[in-house]
Length: 436
Image (cartoon, rainbow, N blue to C red; front, top):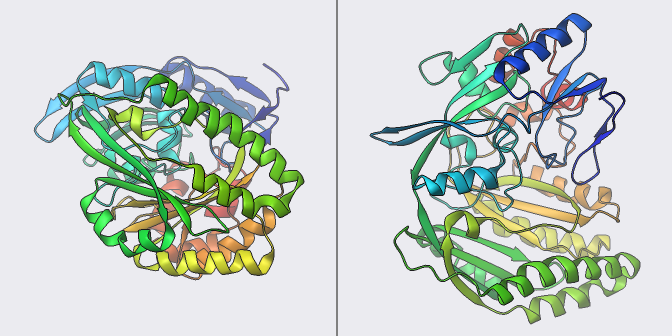
């Protein structure tokens, strides 16, 4: 296809690539990289377009990996089951395939439409103080590098490229396969309930320690939150999924259809936002259910928005939320989207936002019909004051100069990138800003 405009899901990044290719095999990916090199073009791969940044934007060759899908192999080991999956496989498809094999991913985010390579390359995470992000589940990758080499990498083979590529921002090559450490399939018992922000923060240490996957949503301009507590159960546990009618009302009608209408009203009458948030938080009702893990982790998101998310030290969370509340009052920002708070265990992935420290994730959103710039700028100033690290796939204004001190292995990553892609075949303006 020629002169096609590509846009991401949030419609805040777009590209007009020289050509778009849809390779269905690893050899086809390699051929496209070699052809691009001959033509003097840069190459980027794209998944579902759910990154809010322009990390996939290119004026060269855009590789759409939607045909490079499926599970290649399953190999039991003492530490778990290694599953090798092609890079373009969507998470929701992978989850169903794993369940049929009696397996599951250890943790997942709250959206499952991304490709496995795209989600891992941008640092997607779920929640749970004892669990890391998706990149911590990666035990091997296959990468097509700028010279057309197809390299299989893990902790023993090409270990430095493995460390860079398992959360690589698309900067070191095209991921074609990933090997994930999976575990026996399990269910989740979900308890969702309204509460106050003050009470939630008072119990925070207890909930983080005692609940497998804990998160909450704070409604700005109020002291109200929605808490979510998900507890792991064996696959053999009795399933008690939501009644289909209740599920439709809560997850489709209220969370999408009605929420879209509320945000359209808020966009026209921002003075009503505090009252809308108070009403929205009060009408929430508790619910409890048990279902397959992947069905509980993810929720449908059809209301379009822009998002910024920062990983901060857990101990800084109460101070950050208090300052955010004060900043909203002083600035006059009227925000109808809840602020999402999740947690992750420290890890050793070079470019992970949780590298070396237990982290709280604070995500802020703005409806796509409203300008997010001033709100996100104020939030970013708060996050930077506590050494926050921005989610690589979400909006931020950071640059390589101020990101380098936040990541102990930043220069190691750049060294690997310079070695495997000295001419920046896989580069673009976003990577030039955040990596130099």
